[in-house]
Image 1 (tube, one colour):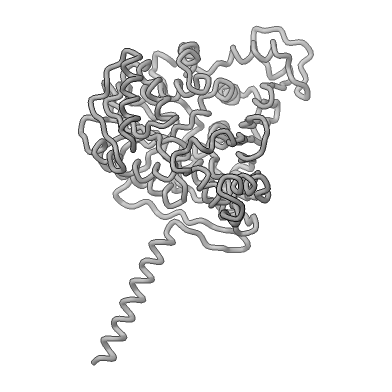
Image 2 (cartoon, rainbow, N blue to C red):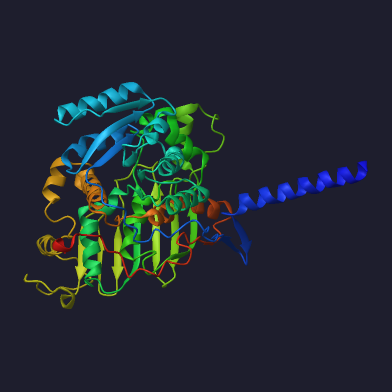
Length: 473
């Protein structure tokens, strides 16, 4: 009898271990035919797709802002200029930051927030209130998904700073929670609202570049002057502990919109590689003492290559430790023309592609247009969502105005009950590069078959369309 009990206990333990392993691997990967293949689990029965989801219109959006560092404080400055929304709650680890934010609101003639929260779990009290519609998160990366999930589970729409998640498991947590709760989950990828990127997107959709075949984006920004500004050293800590493109969304976001990712195309295969940490290790030695960080993980420069279902390619780069001019790269290569934003804004188009009431002489797609020709054409193709608010956006500011357009569009869509410009699948797809690039590098730059966060619905929509009221179309 004793032997039977022991065998039963061992069997139960084995079953338990197997169940736990299956649960852990649900969003993991296997290696097959020299490729890393990520799982795409079936959608649970109690969930529905969030493609083109539109919530009930909100007469006046009540905003709870969590995180009042640099990014959060910027939002405090912007929201008083947006109609149909009010910051009603403020939360930060440090109560003095909450009071500073209240002072900014008063300075701008806006009402003080009704509710103040602080401490490590102050966000929970904020999310538990039933008089808040939107939770706006500007906290360290590692807290994005846990707080966003908590907020959605408490009936709130969520807007999350970039990246929205730091692992594939977190990406699926955002998707599953949004689908189950029927709450919006938008990543605050402001670079999608840069004036140059928006105009190029409109030109692409109008066929000016022909068929777009290749796009590039990056985040190359020397952070040497800024490392000490990250509370608790969280950003340097993440970089020294991880390989890969740990901050991919400024580069990947705008170009994914350009080629209709999960709106007619999808990212299929990814390969990533990096340099050694030449400067990264030196910076760590200076900050912590030589030998304290035995091996700084993140390479000085990371390059990621992606091929889509429709045979298009994407190049994304990350570099935050070498002295070089700021560069988001942003390039569009089409069958009939080319655009790039850095180091100088440039368009190269053939004369047959320019249909405008402007005189263009001897255009050749192998040479850049003159600045005057470029500016005239870009004014003609200004994106509809920027028309009428571009001057106000530049005046209010936030990375040249793109932050204001981002916030304005978020509130506009919530107020009118329209689908958001960025959905939860964008948040997951763009943020997934954080883990995928690290795994590829850790396996000798092995190709990765990427997960499909739409679960097979990537071609149900016909292109990207920013929602507008009928009278504005």
